[in-house]
Length: 495
Image (tube, rainbow, N blue to C red; front, top):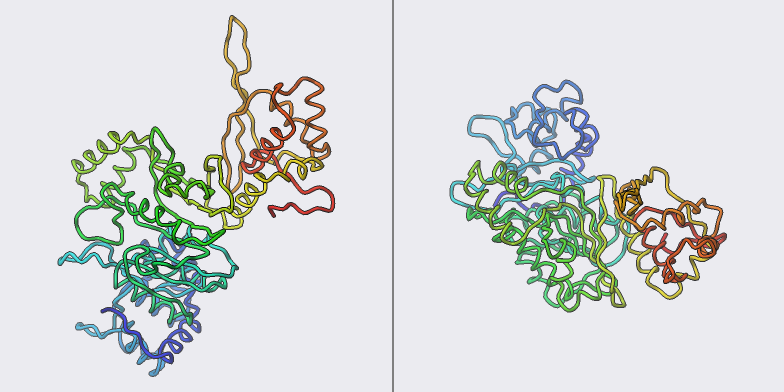
């Protein structure tokens, strides 16, 4: 198998050499003039003039996959390190002369990671290819993982094991798990190359960790419909979602109390249920004890989704794309959504529906955690009393438009549409009466006084009591429509 597990000294020697070269993200994206590492497939280092000769040689060898003259390698790398590179199978002699690297080696997320360079099954149909860690979806997932946390973590559909490496650095013990032996091998290799310890396992989803529970489970699972070419690294099942459904269905058996699963994947909104509602359905009877929050980065129509599959994976086969589109229509699919889902195990039943927000690339783990903690607190009996002395205010950048219609010859307001901004945001329609209430949220008036004033002025529906309004304010806060700081001397419990 490609790459060898050498000695600790071999790994340390290569690691130290790469560090000396500054083989890291910032100088490499600068030299290659890339916006970030996700654009690495577009890179060509043959024409760069900056950087040291040693760094340029390493980039040509490891990033471009070029053959580097042996004399050049010997001039930028001492004999012991070159021997260690050979021992780890990171360097091989080329039949045409010079040396080559059989894998893609690159920096990402502060680590040096190896993966396969070619992501099409070979002529023999082998689909055991290791998905690159610099993929944009993987990079988004890494941003959503905690930067510091204790406990036990599981990186599912792990590929290179980059998720497990990130979580070990954050302070967790981590297990990397993938269905292919090649990925499990690469994950083990990458951990040793970076001087970290993980458990690397091979198997189908949770099978190798049966009976074990984790505090955090992360996954960037494949979601492409099966093409029959054996490309395991990208196949999500017959219509692309079966693997995700199986993964979610097993979460109740493997997430510990208060545990969180973080998924980055494509999902399907149906006419009868949104993707996040379908996630809860896949959890089965245990779904009532999970809070679910989805951050959507982009949406696609059926034709947009199948068209992208035709270009990227179906090799231009229009008939296959159209056949798949018909299947999705028969399943009453409305759209596809791509983004992150946080699935949190709770101590008590969650009766409200999952939350969906828009997500930008700036969103972090802290953004999701804050809202999940807020939702948990909002559901407690103490929330209304806590909220009473706070002074809600409107956030900068919030916009509101009023929808009117003509009734009996008169223009009357129908509803107000609010659009929040930020890393996690939303567009929401509210009843017209809420605009008068929100206009009083100036950061000076307390929430309870705003309620009393609106009540006295007849600005509230008759059935709107303080607990009901407090919950509404709480829901608006988690959607970015209002900002609620803790009362004087009291920290926001969701901070």
